[in-house]
Image 1 (cartoon, rainbow, N blue to C red):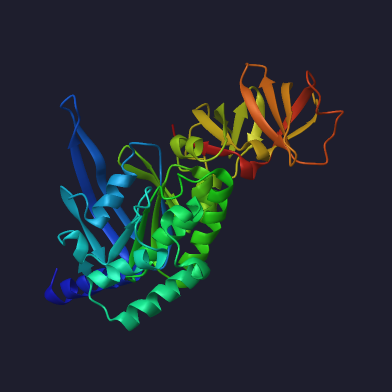
Image 2 (image 1 turned 135 degrees about the vertical axis):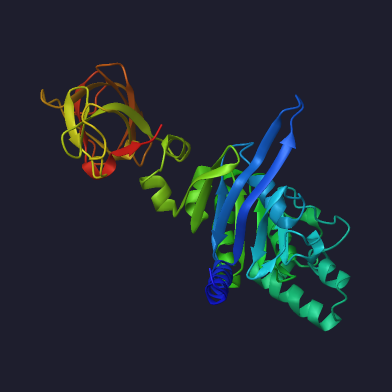
Length: 373
């Protein structure tokens, strides 16, 4: 590659970094387990997170998502790889020199200080002027809707209010990236839902990049602009919530995100699969698979229709019905004893939906997804 080509490649890389905001390149972190084995907590991970995104790191416990977050914050040292903010490489910087801030599961508020004093603390450590601190504290209290109670102590606040104070304190220093590690998990269900809405509002209003770690699939789907689904130290799929939910890349992602049914199928002519002798079209291109190849098909419970029994269709027996208000959840057992979970929305046909009744399974081609094992 000549010099001009090298310079162009460098400019292109820098432009991508500026555009992506936070760039992680082949990050690796290895721990030694208690048994003495090497565990790759972060396994050559590369991510490009655009500036101003609400980005979710999602996965089960032990998948590496928190280790990656701590590496961005500087609380863990990578064994290999690079982390950039725009054009600036930050993985070699001390944590306090990185333009990022972190909100942990434990809010770690100073109990002897008021809300306003908690928010002001970091600004005072930077020796900012009293006027600047007062304005910033006021702005942060307004942002998190706590301006009327800035004089209270943390023990006088609800869990949700303490969470907002922790957010305000982290945002007061105007970080380029805010890292949130399971920061809603200590809240009860209803308050957690409210805080999810609040977090989205705050992120939109500030325009700051949020990187949020969670193991809660519903939380990830409701909040993220993009989601990286982690397993065994690396992302198995990165996409929008709709892409992750509707078109999972593999069986792990399909199984981890929401409820799902898996059916053993066989590839037949064209873009069709056969399940227990019944042919179903699929919208994916499976023409590269040979006829007779064994496949795994995934379908969401709400994407399955139940109709009166048709001798030519895929038949099943309703073995359980649970009324949930917005829908009825059915368990349907197929002839090979495969149990399908089905959600039926109103209006409910009681002639079809009855325990012990035989039904035909209807699935549209767009809703059948062939997944890799």
